[in-house]
Amino acid sequence: MAAVALVVAGAGPALAINSYNATPAPERTEVGALVATWDDDDNPATPDRVDWVCSGTMIDSNTFLTAAHCTAPFTWPANVRFYVSLDQDVQAGLDKGAAEHPGDPVAVARSVGVEGVAHTEAGYPGNSADSHDIAVVEVPAAAMAARWTFTPATLPTAGLLDRLGPRTLDITAFVVAGYGTQEAQRGPGGHTHPGGGARMKAPESFNALNKTWLRLAMTAPQGNGGACYGDSGGPNFAVLGGKLVLVATTITGDAPCYATNVVYRTDTPTARSFLAPFVALP
Ligand SMILES: [Ca+2]
Ligand SMILES: [Ca+2]
Image (cartoon, rainbow, N blue to C red; front, side, top):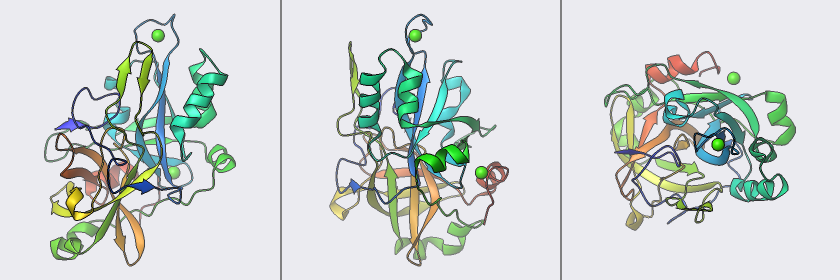
């Protein structure tokens, strides 16, 4: 199992939300990209790298839900800075920003996003039963509202998926969203994101449920799509009573990521106790 952060992970899945059965998701105004600047060559004299690295979701006016493997301090150089962007096409914005602000990664990041402060669940990376792979980025509400109009996602009540149970989940529609891409093609001049960096969505269906994980089928023949690099931290919604409920966040999958999206539940005691200081839970 490989973590699916775009930059943090080394090798692994190769497909993406935008690879099959996926469509742009401009209506998912609450879904955003996690953008970072960091010293990627251990040389403070050269400019930091700037890129989108993960996905996430606004769960109230100032809290962006993402994955711990996207923010954990031990996975980053000490000078990392995080920004949240709710733009539809973050890659296009970064390309434009890079042209306008050469050698100034902070200005490039600010051209697409609002800077925030990451809070990573203290128990991450946990164990296979509970990875504690959840984090938030706290952003200034006024700056977010000045830049974007968005409706925060609805979180589940405690133990919602257990109460629904496999029979109901089997007939429930799921939607995954994120900015993920195929594995970045890196070269001496940087790298490219084939088709990635824009907000996409795809349908999924129920596969299995355990204490902290939900497994969602992303099999193409069934009409499903799925998640891959850069989709980490992004939302997996259950469609319940016609409304989208953010029941889990994208964490990992089976290489090469065409069968199952393995997502971390937001209705568990671990997730809820972590989120409680940041958001009013239902
Ligand atoms: Ca550097
Ligand atoms: Ca909040």
